[in-house]
Length: 632
Ligand code: WT7
Image (cartoon, rainbow, N blue to C red; front, side):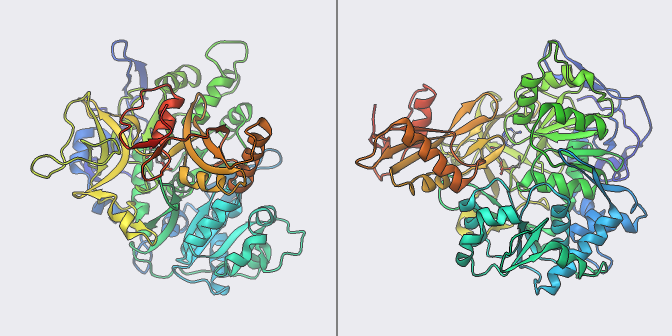
């Protein structure tokens, strides 16, 4: 790659290779499509991110110890995420900078400066402390995108309690299961969510001592405390206790193919990775106005909607409403968003609402001139979407890749590098990635000498593996050492994603090796859905797969066999769908149910989702040697 001229040195610059490259100011970035390759070639200066001026050199020189040493650190020593995200900026004299701009669907925008956010999170930390909540205790949030969520997150981290965010569109089953597994001591939620999802199951959560109700609480809810009461009684002064970078900070539940959800444990030291990757992959710098559309109930919305941008000292736009193309363009315009992090499903929905041509020329009727960088994550981003961005929004979209387990972006079409539409990009400096030869299940295979081996043919695919060693790598699955250990092979962390690597090192997503479903960017465990379906009185067995969908990527589809005496008609279908939605919530429940009295099963009696998927898509069924019943 041609070295890209360096730009003005960003305030978080000066690490690794960047320290060796003279910063200078230069022309603004130009992007054009290379006719032959279809790649989006950048020339001139990436507005910021001088540290990546030479990708190969940056990769060679990058050092996580140095990146970590550039954190502010607690006055008494150690690293605490909330200190890096909030208090640091106040101490550095940027306290009046706006940290949050919360934009409700209608009504006034609520802004919080870093100083105010520091004071409010101190109050919440004191409030928790007064309730007797201590270091290591688990504090769960079940909230929409409201200012209180940010305060609760940061206050919990200041108190050294472990934060576990839940998605507000989860139904009662996923909520209660995760709270049980995670041993929830505190829950912060609203009256409506509490009444709908928790209240009548609270007896089953004996460890849940405190429920904090945000917003108006009109009903008499025994065993709860009002947010306002807790906050009013608490002081604005709080000293963060000494925090070791290895102290646990966050618990993020993620889904596997089988069994219960996995609680990935992350530590305070992770914030070093958030800071670096926010700069390299999102081009984030303190003057930016940044909008991450992911919900903080999921790992993207927490890591890159709360922690990373605040650690970078930017202004974070919090959109409290649901997707609506017209409103989204309005938010981009009226908030003067400069950096935007969103997801393929959202982009595809915008593409539908805003074709390249036609009378309804939304983005052109808005002034999006402040916008200078767009990134996307979570599921494959169609090359078409990258080009649509370039044509319609005037900026190509930078795809990047990571997982709950990695804790931060690891692969990206970097801010400073050319974009290959359809590719996830290249490993960020500080990451060693390999494509390992793998079997059908995505497990690395060993050669004659018993070693795993890389795929060298650019046309060949294998499983993406990463060499651990960066600060935000998960430290374990909660209470499941066995599963944690099995995620590693010969010192590689195995992602379970099948990829291809071209001769320039760009990685191309091929598919997941396991049965896990990605719908609208959300990871869904088929087992969790099947278990809920089987509680319906009519359902004998269930197999759940992802069915390709032009907007959501995939949607959840269930195949069920019925118990004797039930009629497989449309009424039962509607009833099962509604049942699943009540239990699982709209984010997880199937969109479609098909009846099949002859589900394909292995000899050991497991429903073969792989065959259901192949049949659904009219693909060859592959190896059916273990098929016991349900053959076509
Ligand atoms: C899985 C991780 C989005 C990160 C946080 C959510 C899929 C992620 C891409 C991409 C194709 C992607 C993978 C991965 N994925 N980014 N750019 N292209 N697929 O983390 O919920 O743990 O999901 O999302 O399958 O393993 P997660």
